[in-house]
Length: 315
Image (tube, rainbow, N blue to C red; front, side):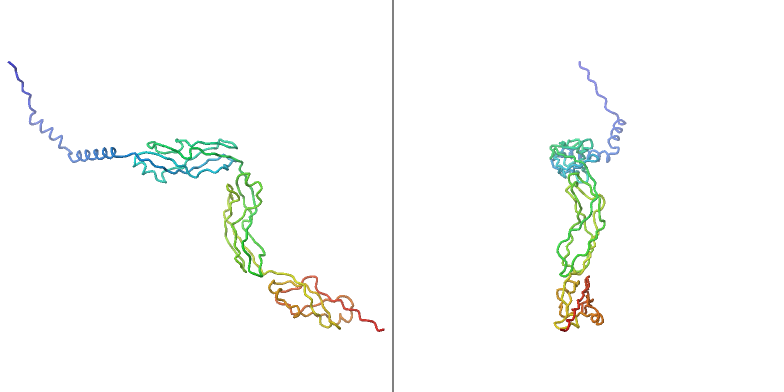
């Protein structure tokens, strides 16, 4: 005969304890369960994304040397990772790639860009780097003090000319490869257009780089003052001298004045005079005073003189 044993049922006290354990903080437990499911589903649904980012390239050069080969301003890096991580790769989150060549000497070098130099988050996978290597040519760095020159374009107004050009600073210190600066004799400002002016000009202009890899050490701009004056020319004219005998006396006078005035000068309107007493008592050259000179016109040394003819002796 088979003996059956009954499994004892939990008592009322045990059932109430279990029911209380399940119902305690039921809201918090349900929230945690739902949050865990959301995170699980989000992670499961996160896809791998591939993109290309641009990273700036910085070169740490040795003291006394400068690279004279063109370097790409940016390196293109192709990476893959979760869409959230890729979205976080903004321009401000990417540090520049710094290549330290301070241990290199003068000459040519080929440098490879390694993945560990990129400084990207470890959960991103680098697929490609372009360019993956760069060429360098390190040359001696030179400093030199050069005068500043101002190129002028155009012409002043007719009858005017540039009297002087002042620039401040008058000289600057420049730095660059020895090859660029070796034969350099001056550094130039940006050109100034005279624009047919008849007045003084003042301008603040930038200094132009003396070479592709050279620059002014401190100054970046210059103050320029251009003094414009009426153009003055000289002209020799023949002037009639009052008091001359038969055929009249004439003196040659060298005049200087504004170009437009001198071009329009009518020599027949000028008059020359000498002292009567000198004329009567002297046979040598007599000084001549020129009258009716236009405003701004002056006599140029030597001053005009007149040789008084010796009177003919009676037969």
